[in-house]
Image: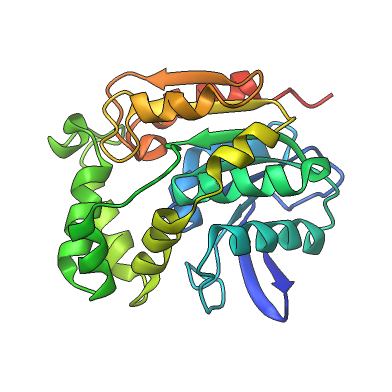
Length: 266
């Protein structure tokens, strides 16, 4: 599905069903240098169980027009503009990594627009390793290798996949390599520079769930829990053995956590 925001194309996957804005909406926001494809299982489930689903490609990602937006605050405003373009008054937001910061900030800035919030791999502040940030700034392939290696847990690195014959590490690398120059740095730097996470967390007034990977090396459970403690009434779900990219490593467990959290359509 294609939308228009500020005269630029925004692509959103709809889970294999035509998008219906009259249904309860769930909007998915991907992580750094990724796109809508990271939500394959989760979007299809919700689209076929009574929800209107949009898995957006952020500007300059996937099939969406550029240029990229350099700040979390700017991306939060853009996300609400996407809701407007889709004809949505409210939506549940599901964000991963940089996408989780975007949805966190959006929910704090526009409380009347967000019915529920699920944060995957989210901690604040979300500082980025100096070597990774430097390599990303220089568009060095090392940045892709570090992002991929630190993004997956050990089981994934040993070849575990829910689909026999597939290796998610190779898929993750291909996704990073497909991004345009500067996109990974843009996203990593937006995370690194974002200072508003604690303030945003304390403003939230919608049901909130933090989904954490037990073996997440980028946003460790210890750091993620510090954020949860600042959100009134927030719940948490820790997925055993999962790393940072839990919706790929442990798609069924990630879906179960989201399904248990989001209210069933009436």
